Length: 304
Image 1: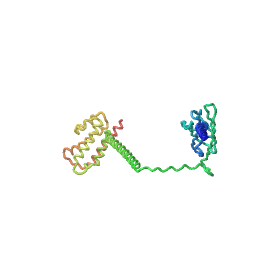
Image 2: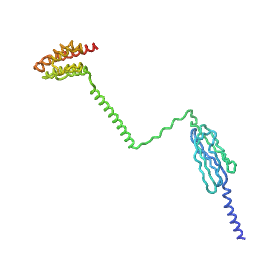
Image 3: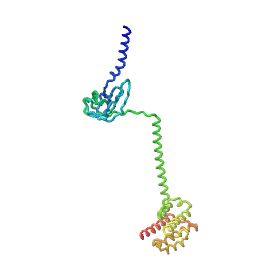
């Protein structure tokens, strides 16, 4: 009797071990939403977990549509087989733009046998961004303070200094270039003569015992101007030769009219340079040179 009871009990236990997995592998579809409450504009996750007996796979379209929610994304489904069951997980991201309690589901899952498995319903509480009693939108939250290491500030300071040095260098080089171009600019005969007379009037040659140098410079200014302006060999000519060139010149009426005055002034210069003559009219002679130059220039401009 005891042996028969033991055999019956063993058979019953074996039956339970074989039958329980079949009973436990029930078909179910669980729908959930996280978080369960959100504010307008927040993103929530909708998860559908389908459990079927091992070997079966659901036929579920992941192009779902949920009332009052905007589906903005979906993740790759997850599939697994364990302990005699097959589990399929579908995940979606949704955004809601209207406050209140939103009902999600049920969702329909097609079974291999041709039947349909319905999921449960779940809810989502959507709150307004306005607090109770608020009549306006809350201000933007203050930005979080970000602490940078010391080396970051040192690097920024070095970069700023490098930029300033570069700008200073470029400006300095540009100024030097402009100055060099201004120095290299070719002056007209009139500009060169006027600059030379201006320098002579403020030079130290008018003082002390530099009378000879002063009159050499004065005659050189006038001869150089005549040679550059009228293409006459004035620098290599004596005063008498230059007078004849001016008198016989056909290029300028002003030269002919003022040739005699120019001859007298250049003769005065020759007396100082070659006969050791010491006049007391240095300033007057400079004014005479300026006057002759001005008259020649004026007459020539009138002819043009």
